[in-house]
Image 1 (cartoon, rainbow, N blue to C red):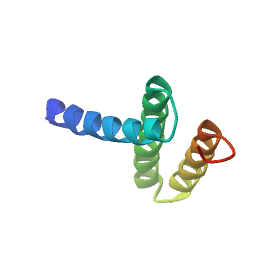
Image 2: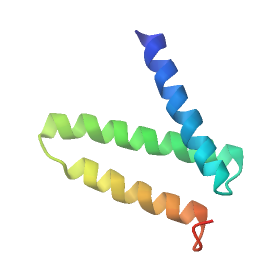
Image 3: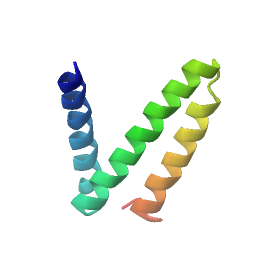
Image 4: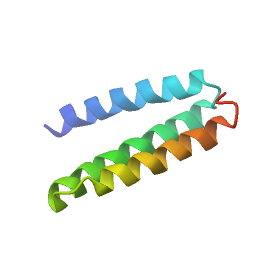
Length: 77
């Protein structure tokens, strides 16, 4: 089960990093941003379930959207 989860997460990371790198980020920065996004959103899902509130999802989404915008620059690279 652990390996299956790791494989799925790695496939998401690879896909996200590829997308971000295609937008002009270095491969290292693209992977870092993708992992941060995944960690923030997965953590937000756990908090949302535990608190029965969407607040954590809304905040994580907003923060990560800003992080992507900052990473890509004002023109959206």
